[in-house]
Image: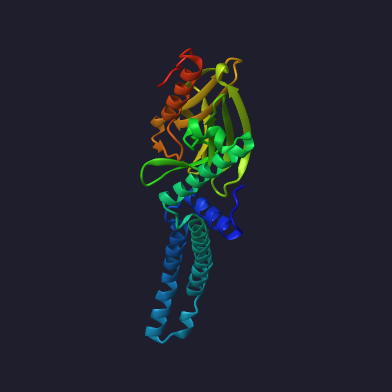
Length: 292
């Protein structure tokens, strides 16, 4: 996990939680209103008897059975009406307080950008690399490819871009002799790592680097509801032994969820850089793969 003080972690966690919590619609007080109206109607006979008794100075009629029974009926309905109103309002206030006020899209993007920067540094340590190992081929920066994490919550921001509560981050460093990769799943709420792996591949073993569309799906939570979402684009690095390293970088646009907002480089940029390095080391003898 990133080095954040307790207060910074708490503030970030709260903001991210609110961002992905659906704001409840205004409550409906239908039950309370119905009971209240019926209670008011039940009071009409009592009021009629009371007014008539006062007008005729017949005080005993004010306490007639009709007036007493109608008043009791009105009271019996008014109490649950009030309780229903308070219960509905209390639930709404609690749910609203859990979702609002929301942070801006820019704040959420900044948390994500910091994660990508932090884990780019972590990757060098995990892979046992030194600045001199990567300076020439990476110009001081790795290739960072970002996708949605499995079971992530998803929300479309005001700018129409998708944002996820967890991310799959793939950090690739190109060295003079091999491709080193660090892959992790990071929780946006606090920057913690759910899982992480490291990979090292000699250039001669890489047979394809591409983006692909296929029939695979990822499970996401949209407005709190689980949905199986088709992958629209997947970055894939394939090895001669059949091993693949892949990241789902975009989801099906037909769901009208928007487009993915990510702090890393585009898959196309990563592919161009890796292919250029492969051509240098393999003399162009590399399958360019599919790009769609």
